[in-house]
Image (cartoon, rainbow, N blue to C red):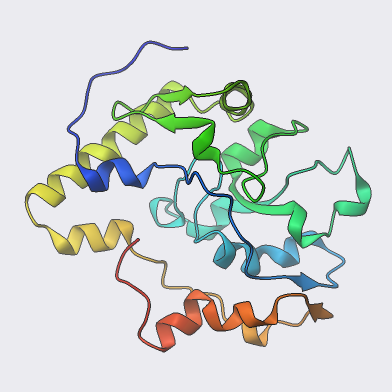
Amino acid sequence: MPPPGPMTMSCETGRSVFAYPTDAHIRRHGPIGYTHYPSFKPWLRDEFSFRCVYCLLRERWYPNGPDSFGVDHVVPKSVELTLVCAYDNLVYACNRCNSAKLTAQVLDPCVDGLGNHLRIEDNGVATALTKEGEYAIDAFNLNDARLQKYRREVINKICRWEENDDHESLTWDLGYPSSLPRLDILRCKSNARPEGISESHFDRHSRGELPDRY
């Protein structure tokens, strides 16, 4: 494990930005019938709240937004071809993590919350809590020096804004993207969880139920 970097300020919001959930993610969508797996991307953007399931970086932090993200297979294509277009085998991941993973088979966040296996310290270092967490850190290179530095900068920035009651900056950095996918107009053969559309971010925003930041 690399040595810790400089310590940062600590605040609840700063810590929560890189807090992995301890509960397994329960899928709310279930589109079926696409024969080209990138077609699932709008559903996965909404499913995983516009952030990478592996490193927790958000679309909003990338200059080109969702173009820096894609569809990842939990069970790699090289291992099981029948799952290439199976929605429940797909997650939303940034291109960096997707490229680093290659054919590694890691924890499925819909089976076991990643927070049970690793955590991000206030200084930006990823710490393994289990052997599975250690493997995930290696697979996604989560302790890359540049990624650690970026995490520290984000945590420090969020903490400063919170201490200064800078709600506008907090909302900009922790808010939802402007391009919320409208899932009800997307065409797929069927949907195993059609009720999930009403709980999509677009529909919640339309009803005035979507918070300013998350």
